[in-house]
Length: 384
Image (cartoon, rainbow, N blue to C red; front, side):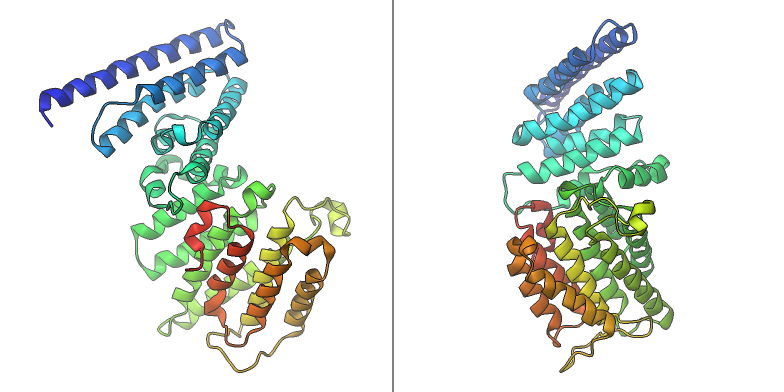
């Protein structure tokens, strides 16, 4: 491209950036002086975001356009930094609803990059990032949209990384954490790094609980990656220490899956005696976690046992028999009528002696295929 023409395009974007920055400063001054109410502030923020989309930076190259959009969105989002705490919370929530409404008409990935570049609040950052990733998969034009563009666009703030990870957990930003996992795995292809990531997934799994059907399926991405990493760690050359660490992690995962699959929450005094609140997760989620737990109870029956090769028959422990019996009872329960096909296929898969621990990712992919076929962010764990 002609250098003169290129500089002309950049000048147009700079002018647009100056306009957005001036508008934000004016709105911050009004808000601090009590001269504008929240609904008007939200409307003005939407106008700014829409103006960025409408302006459509004239830069020609994909990377140049991405960064031009990113700069303009960064200018607009600084409004959240300048207003009061309650107004900032409300504006962050408004950006998330705007993203969902905008759909395909919004350049989502530049907005994802902008979050870590301009937002002072890690809480706002993680929630808007999660909304960006969700919108990217929900509104993508291609059916087979993948995680690659998300990994390139997501920038984790290294200086506040602990706060970032903590806020992502507490706020249910599980897709953001999955992207972080993939980035870390791609940064270092070593068994040591894989063990670090496995430990991280195990820790997060123990600490989080999905708030409802909107969050629950995101956890399957973590567990599918964890199962694959375990298979890699259990190669013939693995030492006893490494194998022991993997087995202990799998036993902890098995116990946690059982907790997540309970009908009622077991926290608090009432929970301890079986009278806790009904769990917010769906029946579909219960099927997945109970099937995976039952599979692990057969393949990893104890600290010293691990089925790495198929056999002609299954030796079921009392615990494994109990868990399989629970699945078969669910299969005949009217409450689970809509998920019977998935349950029956999963039970058949689990009972087949030709399957061993290495087939764990396939079991998860099988039930996800049957129960969550509409979620595009899960396409990465689909069966071929």
